Image (cartoon, rainbow, N blue to C red; front, side, top):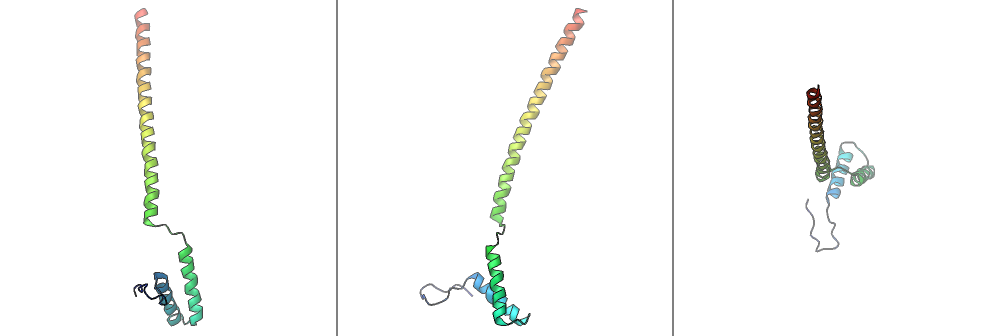
Amino acid sequence: MGAVAQTDPYRVKYTSSAVFRGRAVELLVNKARLEPDVALAFAEAIDMAISNAQLVTVPVLDTRFAAVDAKIEKCKADLVRWVFLVMLGNVALSAGATAVLNFLQRTH
């Protein structure tokens, strides 16, 4: 069933939820042997629950992963900067200690 043209205002526009509701009612009446009114109530309740649910979609996940990737990249950059500074400090300390030890050995 496709969407009905909007030229006639008295016609019902079929939506995916209306199609879902129709199929659900048919399934509940035929297989579960429920009364049509009860089946329709169940189908409407399920439709409302699905439409009000905050489902996580692929674009939402992509956005969240992009944010996490940006944070990881920032942490990587900070880590590289700190490792470089620690190595530079280590070299400076080693050079200073070597200079002091050489000076002490020459004086004795």
